[in-house]
Image (tube, rainbow, N blue to C red; front, side):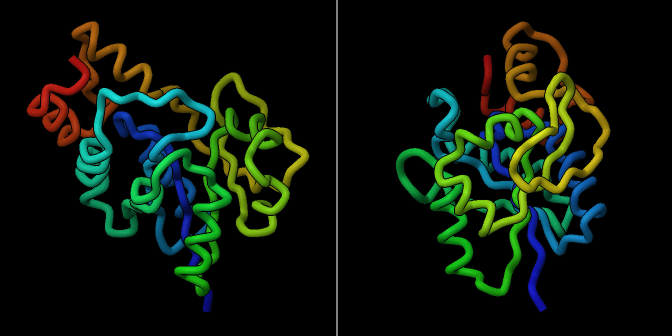
Amino acid sequence: MQKRVGLLGGTFNPPHLGHLIIANEIIHALSLDEIRFMPNQEPPHKNPSPSITSQHRVEMLELAIKDVPSFKVEKIELERKGKSYTYETIQYLKKREPETDFYFIIGADMIEYLPKWHKIDELTQMIQFVGVNRPRYSQLSEYPVLLVETPDVDISSTMIRTRLREGKSVRFLVPDDVIKYMEDQRLYE
């Protein structure tokens, strides 16, 4: 029997409760075996943010998911150099784990961006895209995207970093262990 694994990519700079809520909703809605949080090395659609190392992002992710056995960290994109093209990542994962069906989770902002993805037609043959709603974005797409309704949680890593720079609280937006880690490591000051 094929294993069913959700992949949630992102910079996780830092991870926040919005990521965890989406993962929790998807794993239950689709009866997946696990969700893997997959930090990007260098997402093709974003400028690199050199201030926070990959090691810090992985440490924060591991703290954020430590109490949920079905949540894992997938480091495959950090182990490769250069831009993180999903097509290449999925090729590698399918070769490494032929017994696994992958469900690639994207927000509505990325659904709109799908026509610009590298080798999108091939990708849709390799994985099932799973789309979640985000405020202010459409979920309409010419590509096959399985839509899962999730609570609208308008939290972003950009908003968290801005609040931290302004000295505002991020309690109830970021797991407590991640807040402690950010404070101990003096991140985002």
